[in-house]
Amino acid sequence: MSLRQNIRTVICFTANCPTANYPAVNCLTANCPGITSKIYIPCEKWRRADLNLMLDYVTTPFSLILDGIAAITEDLNLVRLLSIVIGLRSIGVGVVGGAERGRDGYWDYTCTRMRLENSRLSLRDGYEFSRAACLFCDVTSSSFLAATKILRDVPYDLNLAYRSQMLDWGLRLQRKGILSMTCPDVMFHVQRNLRIREQHREPDRSCITKEDRKQARAVVWAVKRQYRKLAQKWELNYVTFNNGTSFEYTCREIRYECNAYHKVRYYLLPPCCLKMKYKMFNTVDIIAKENHIPYEISSGTLLGALKFKDGLPWDFDDDAQYRNSDVEIFLRNKNRMRRLGISPSFSDQANRANKSLISKYIYATSPGGFFLDLWGVNKLSSTGTLDALAKYPDNLVCLQDGHIPTPIKVAKSMQQNKTEFASRTKSVQPSCFLSSIMRVGTNYLPGPWNPGKKGLIHYGDNLFHHQGHWRWSSIENPGWLACPRPGHHNCLDIHPIDGSLPFL
Picture: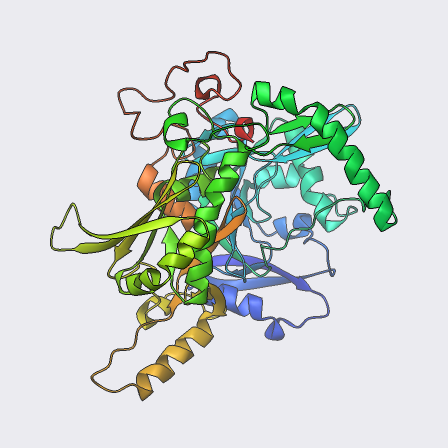
């Protein structure tokens, strides 16, 4: 991120914590050489900074609010945020947030839609519309760029609990017609873990004893069986009733053949098929972690993680890259991979652009008609060499062996020690990788350092718009193919070409 000179920052810290002992402030400002002066404002513990007080020092039309930031890097593309908020202000955009990478190495973004009606507030993660590779949301990240006037006219309600403030603020922005967006290619490094998410559910105490639970299960099974033929006839994975009761049926129970390669041409894959697909990467991930094999998801798998935090429901294959040098480990685990449900085959494939480059290609199949492509490369782009690690602050994390979050400071020290003790004829392979962990359905898999940026570079501004699988679609014929069973609830052509919520 390029910063203009003589930038003055306003930093809020807890009142009982001296700034000299506040490492986040030191690390934050150390990476911003353009900052020449800092204004410190004490704020109460566990409360968001009083923006009204801080805004007294702001003279620019836009303000960048950083909440719980661990460090500033090139991933925080201020020019990108400004281009969106300025370029789209004519349609009402006033707040733009981004994705976050936590201290546990996990990557995620917040895009929540809110619906307030009949005394009920409903929240759903996902988006309905996108533009310029950014998503329209009611709630975005806690760090964001906003028009200063909006921050002054619509202040946070500090009488509310911290977690409620963003929801309340989003509702008031919504009422005033101010739009918020999330740009996942802009990444904030935050101090908290992202993997842990609280589940707000009331404990079920209706069944007390083991016998009660057994009897309750029998009743549920009897009722579920009454609707099984209905689920078979209409190819339903779930039946949800008006009292909130929901029954889930497996593909086997509804006699549904996934046959993914042929189905995705015209239909969405139902959840029971996607669960079968998850097993492919679950198998790869188990073997990779046990044998310290780094790899990264790519192509359609990365695209699905960006759009849905899941697999693409119209994709029959998964994609990843790994190191050619690790192919022998996969070969040794071939029988185990088969026991876990996938059938691999190994071959050498020449690079299309450079025939002299050979990829140790692993092609695997699994039940349901799914395929897995593992492409070998001589060196992963995320390899954490000392030069690569030096570009990032020491308090951020890389992934040791491609899986274990490790502070960059520790990784650099480990690599330097290995280099010192290694012989001159033996090169030291970096063991920490500049990757991030992403959610893909029920799996958490390693992906690029900044997944949103990688996706934007590869797929362009229409990243979050949809298109059928490349085998059956083209630039001349974008969108979905005409469904052979018009009106079927899984037909692709009755779904929009933008938004994730219609597919969830």
